[in-house]
Length: 165
Image 1 (cartoon, one colour):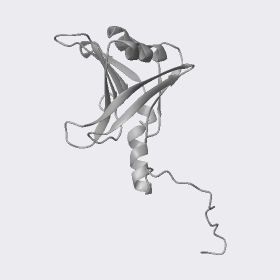
Image 2 (image 1 turned 60 degrees about the horizontal axis):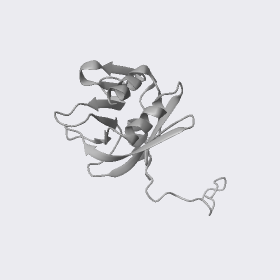
Image 3 (image 1 turned 45 degrees about the vertical axis):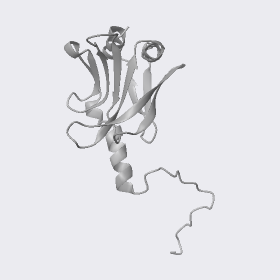
């Protein structure tokens, strides 16, 4: 070790599942955080879909799907690195309100990469997510292993959530 180098402290802990090389960490970070110029909500009325980020590469989407038979369902997608078959919890926090929904890793149709998706039937979980987005604040959207995404509550997001009630 060089004379002026510091040895790492013995009490430093490393997370077992944490990315260990800088390229892997950078890839995870870049897929989780959209560029500043891409931030914003857009709404597609025909699909009942609100996108946060750029329309071509959203970071987060909310969609109210109308089924042929049965009630509407809320489809929540966090567009960030995930592998098909992974399981997790997507959490929303704003002000004093919180909500969590189970998510699955889903492969992208292109075959390159994947994303996190929750399909939430009408009911308590949908209402809990709606309460988080009801305020004027920002919402922290997080799933384990990637940096959280902070989104404004936005009229477009609230419209999709209202569509699913």
